[in-house]
Amino acid sequence: KNQVEQSPQSLIILEGKNCTLQCNYTVSPFSNLRWYKQDTGRGPVSLTIMTFSENTKSNGRYTATLDADTKQSSLHITASQLSDSASYICVVSAIKAAGNKLTFGGGTRVLVKP
Amino acid sequence: EPEVTQTPSHQVTQMGQEVILRCVPISNHLYFYWYRQILGQKVEFLVSFYNNEISEKSEIFDDQFSVERPDGSNFTLKIRSTKLEDSAMYFCASGQYSGNTIYFGEGSWLTVV
Image (cartoon, rainbow over all chains, first blue to last red; front, side, top):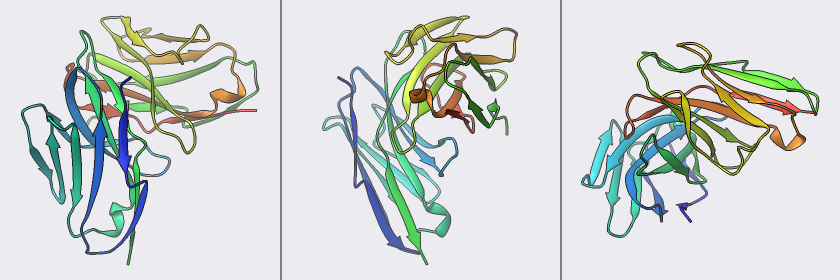
């Protein structure tokens, strides 16, 4: 069964500090891995998308890594800001003939404190 | 920037009533999706739609659910006879190509009482 597990479930960091979120997956056949940011009560917003051949991708202060061999990914947030407070969701896509079937992780809830 | 729009943003309905959630995907997108998120839980796949037909659906998407693309712009999710457990945030999403970024709408919050 395709699964995506994220850790930690939640974390609190001080403004300006860095943090790293983890994602392990068992989705097969693998197509790509995405990180989304979801503010409470809002729709998920894409941060990065990585295919099998990509090891790292950055989007501003967000840097995602992918190890397709160990089926692990991480999202690193640099110099956190108060606006980074949100849930960060790892989403893995399986190869399908028509369209993506995304498997969502449970998310890591990040709270940035001043 | 183009975006996926959903209506209504909130709806309260009585158990057993029919509900239609509406979505306007991004105009040049070809792949359309509905997801739902029960409060405090992870986002769950419901259905994908391509080339005017369902390409995949989850076990959640039973006979009570249906989707339609009645014209060139709207994409709707109908729940025929709502149950209490249908209370959730329903997200519409669209993508241009199969492996590309999927863009989510802001969601329709459905409460069944």
